Length: 293
Image (tube, rainbow, N blue to C red; front, side, top):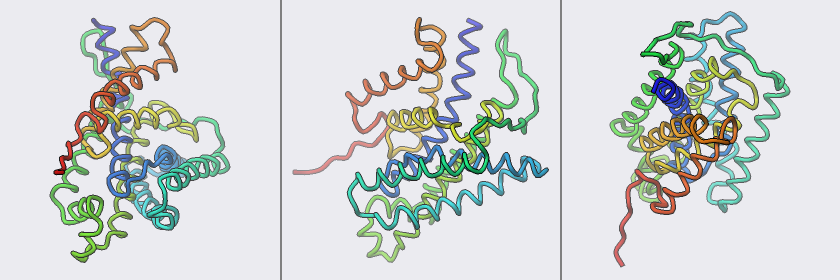
């Protein structure tokens, strides 16, 4: 039982990071219909900037807000410079642009910082909370709490603010939004900015646990895609729940299923996701759209 609880805690900690990245993927997808394969590299780049600021002597809780703002602006810039010119093109064109973003950012990060892993000190301290024979570190607990706060803030923004309502309208019905004098392009830029900021927080919170480097989120972003598919790319809360399911499932599978230790455990959540999508292709939490003949 103690081993089970320990793996459960580890899965929850990892799952919140997957959920944070999945949330960023959903924000972009809802706004533009684009699956951003460069989302993990964007988050990694932001995390490396946090690391660089720490090397300059900047306190973590000063560096993080700076990077969140910079990431927000950079996300808007990426949408304006890279995505806007191919808006309305085929899905394949948009896919190639995000793949190009993935490869380009990875190469730039390697050129600036090298490809070796770098350590980020925990902003929550090195303490441990014992729960029976199991334990949670302050970093794991703080990371989960921080990402949960970001999820709640993002949800409130989309549901109860003018900016959020305009973004939802622009993504769901751009033609009608333009008739209502909503600047659709500006709302899409803001959506990319929010996604970049959320990814920056997810990266900064996971870096003290796994380290940071250009390949930091290489596998993690695949699990984030699985999490978003589980909950539905149009449901932000569902994506976070999917992240927790994927995190816990991967952790437990690596421990209790023979032959699935290490990196091979990544196949388990994808098998589970495939089964879910066969029964409900739009995702478990996505709203069902009904149309009249």
